[in-house]
Structures are given as structure tokens and as C-alpha cells.
Image 1 (cartoon, rainbow, N blue to C red):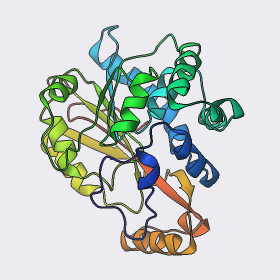
Image 2 (cartoon, rainbow, N blue to C red):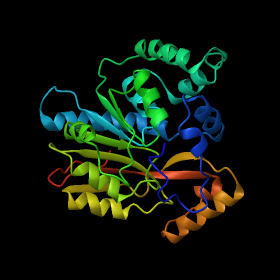
Image 3 (tube, rainbow, N blue to C red):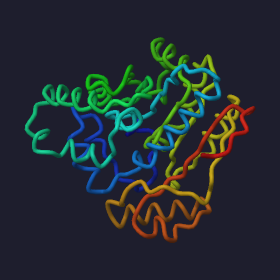
Image 4 (spheres, rainbow, N blue to C red):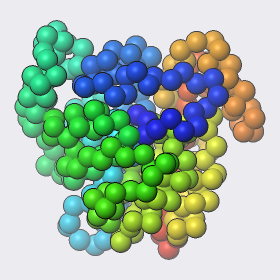
Length: 280
């Protein structure tokens, strides 16, 4: 789930070869054995935040969600459908899915997701530089709009600007560290209504530059430093050593977390400065 090769944490394994395949099967086969699980932890958080964002408007109008670094649309799948991440992994590694062409898998997925659509589903816009991934998510019915753009290197298109103008909530689980404050600045400059942001960020990645950018655009950010969420297992001892060093350098303690063999994230919630809501 990356939006462009900008600045990845030193020593972190890159999975560039699976992020832009024609369909999600290679992505799942590589990440499921590493217990990549952050979308699972984000599922309920994003639903609660979406509900809070809707209540803040005082209307019954659906909240449009922009999933940043959306990849194949798994966050949208989990947000809007009666399905778990474990079920998605089983779905894409099943003998039935394995036997299909990409075109056939799209049709298979359309039925799979349509039969599990939640009554409270809301529009989801997907943004990622991986064009094949976002187009798959769009074709499978997970995204209402899809944009393959890299805002680290170019301004948003006019179509993306219009889409962001209607957005009430931005979500991200796997991109911070590959994208920087520049992407968030570009998005916030497009807004026409209050935007909230819900971001899961690796403890190895400095997030303060993004927090500063958000504050410059009228958003205040909160987090619970004692609450962490596992992301995935390390791929090697070298990757673990690098993560532990980065956590120590940031002034955090890896004991019981990265020192035990996994990446961990923190949840950051950003809302307009006038909002006094507590961290979810």
C-alpha cells in the first residue's frame, strides 16, 4: 500500500513487485504469511471515525472517504462490507480464485463484494500511484472513484481536486513513510469542507512533519502513545535490527514490540482545531 517510492524507512523491505500487479493475488500471497494485519485493526476504527464525522455535520448525508495509498482497495472492502481481513486472505488464496484469469477474478469479486455490502456503506475514493491496483479495486466495485497519482511529485489533477473537495474523511494504513507532508498539503489545499484524517503510522517513521502540516491547515492531531497496533512480522533479522534502531532513535522503547519481531504502528486522529473530541 504505497503511493510512490519517496522515503522508506532505512532497512525496511520493499515489496514494489507486488503493489502494481493486475490483481491482488500476488500481494496476498506475499503479505499474508507475514501476518500483515493493520487493515484488520483499522476496520472498526475507520467505521467509528466515519460515524463521528457524519454526526459532526448534523445530517444523514453519507461521508465520502478518501483512502490514501489504497492499493487494491482492502480498506474499502473492510469498511463497506461484511468481511474480515482473514476472509479476504482466504478468498484470494482459494483454489477457485487461483484458477481464474484477472478478468474472471474481477467478475468473481463483483459478486463476492455485492453479496456482502453493508447497509451503511459510503462512497470511497482511492488514491495510489499503482495504477493497476486502483483500477482493479475500481473494477471490482470497491471504489467509487480511483486516481493513480503521485502527489509527492506532481499536483493533483482537476478530477482529483473535485473528488477531494467532497471528501469528509481521509484514511491511511500503509503509506506514511513512502509519502510525506507534501501529499497531505496537496490534498488539504483541495478541500471545500472540513476534512478529518485517521492514520496508522509505523513507530519507525517520523510523523511530526505531517502533524505540523496538518496544523498549518487547521487540523489538530491526537494520539495515545501507550496504544500500539501490530502491522506485520519482520522479513529478516536485518530488517528487525533497523526497526529497533529507528525506534530507539525516536526516543521510544522497542521492548515487547519491535524487539519481539513485528512492526508496530500508532493511530493518529486529526480534526479541525475547534473539535474537542477525544482520541478514538
